[in-house]
Amino acid sequence: MSDTPDRRLLLVHAHPDDESIGTGATMARYAAEGAGVTLVTCTGGERGEILVPELAHLAHDQEDKLAEHRRGELAEAMRALGVTDHRFLGGFGRYSDSGMEWHPDGHAIAGDDRPVNAFWDADLTEAATLLVEVIREVRPQVLVAYDDFGNYGHPDHIQAHRVATYAADLAAVPSYRRDLGESWEITKIYWVAMSESRWRRSLRAIRDAGDTTTFQGMDPDGPLPMATPDADLAAEIDATAYADQKVAALQAHRTQIEVDGPFFALSNHVGNEVLGVESYRIARGTPAPGPNGLEDDLFAGL
Image 1 (cartoon, rainbow, N blue to C red):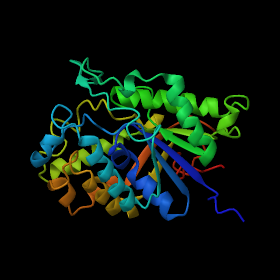
Image 2 (spheres, rainbow, N blue to C red):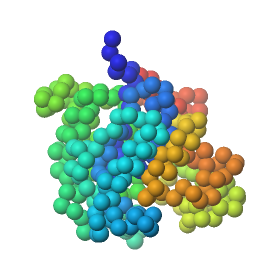
Image 3 (cartoon, rainbow, N blue to C red):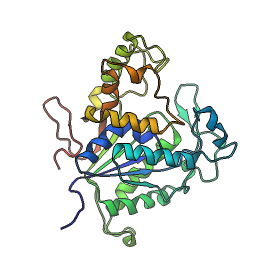
Image 4 (cartoon, one colour):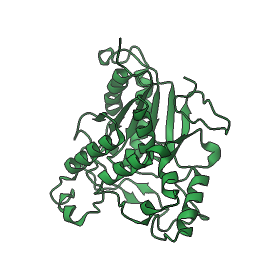
């Protein structure tokens, strides 16, 4: 009898910590339920901002050892989420964090000072083929990736979207790279999203609780460019039971995320709602919505 799980989920993220921020609760839930959960991280996060002063020497313009450190943080985060299958695209160090700059309009763009192996500059077919090999090995029914804008414009997120989308197509072609295994067609593809109504409601509760520093500059009644209109959502995964695991995963990424602020200490469960309920848009497949019009399971209908 095969020990391959009946349900198999593949997630493609750009940097260590992206997985915990956007999909950590979902990953913890499906891992706990016995589904196969595979994470592919495209870079080592070499150019991330270091929030721990005593580790500033690891930066790319100093000792350039941040990726190796973040590799350990990611391993710790995966233990917290209960995920045992994690890979770096093409192996650790194949592609580097491209870095980013902020456009005057408020979204991220690619910077001019990029390393030679920057993921943004990767050959699309080459990078996608590396992912094809994973897809044909894991044979996931569901793929989670970013939208075409990478959710906020980060070049590595956009590239991760392109690589995941192209790889899903190539993996399904029987005659493409037969040496990489039997073809496999992914039934459902989702894009990570952030519910606008839930985000506004949570921000308002955070402000009402007296917290003016968390998500500073975001107005619950103002523009929220990273949020997704609720009409565009297809699935909402309630994994509040795993919010504590998500917090533990976030805490593992200590060079990148501050988790000791007032937001995480709220006693009215606002933190759990923000962290434990994760939303998705559907990019491929037939949705199977529940009574509220949204899927509550990424494998619904399969």
